[in-house]
Length: 122
Image 1 (cartoon, rainbow, N blue to C red):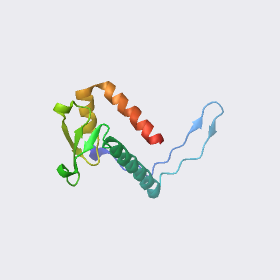
Image 2: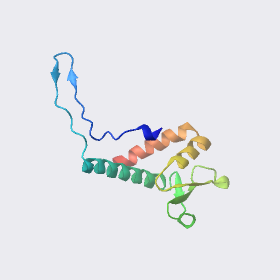
Image 3: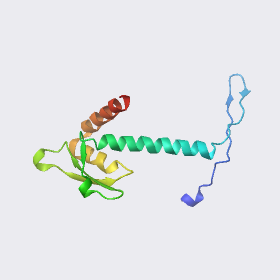
Image 4: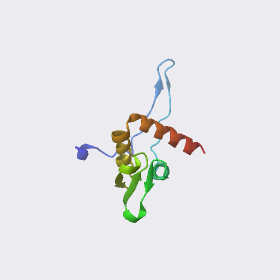
């Protein structure tokens, strides 16, 4: 199915306003440097999110059990006698967030989102 997708980097888009029939100039496609800047910003945002996730409030990173791209962290929201180790990849937070949602509920996810928002504002 992915083979059917064509490279659309040369597509230009034009828009018009139907109220007064003004036509705007076509938009130029993103340059490769613009695309790289967007990817770098997304990567930095993802890295910041991981750092917040592993700052010890929700998960405590266990470097002695982590290697390369694989991260192991201790869930700080689990009861002390049943703390869970969660494993995930360095470039993805889904395992950690799935654990929070599955074991601690949607309320915990909402608290986490609020926590991230506050941390990013600081």
